[in-house]
Image (cartoon, rainbow over the protein chains, first blue to last red):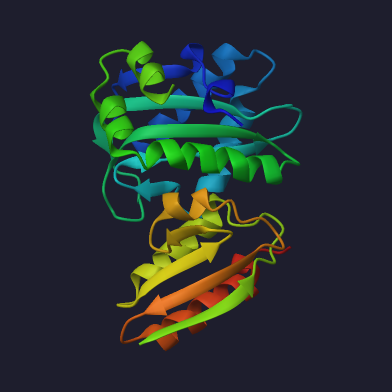
Length: 147
Length: 90
């Protein structure tokens, strides 16, 4: 799995103006559906929110990986959003989050899902990459940082 | 004190995001430094990202090493979490 297979400029947004955890989930869902009209907005939003209820996907250092299982999709889809101001997210380290690496995952996938998480984790554990994402002034710069 | 034990990941989804987060939260409760070792890779248990990089799927064997004054309690807690499938059904 290489990360460029799951990310796309169409599904990336830089420095969105967002004040709440709920709103960021709506923004992510809207971006996902805009890039893939087969997806249903409510369905995507509900899948991610119900996962979030089981425990925050804020994994620390201002990063979250919101995700949900979606019936009927073939491959993992990533949506990357940075927020202008960090959002309170109940993260593991209680720090607010400004980098959201969201994933829509096919309902039956397990092994590939772990590989994807591993690839993403490798990128997001690189301080230089995270700094570049955080400081990006455009979505092109976010994609470039992850390439 | 350093103690270690081999454990097998038994839950269906393996060390996915939620499982890794639960383990990291647990690890943060102990003074002991807790590391997981699997196939030449090593991860601090208090880092969700490091745990996800292990790609531990169902059936994988991991060595859990705890180093510190509460190492015994830490190992027991980690073992309980893994054996109880991270509180997942399968």
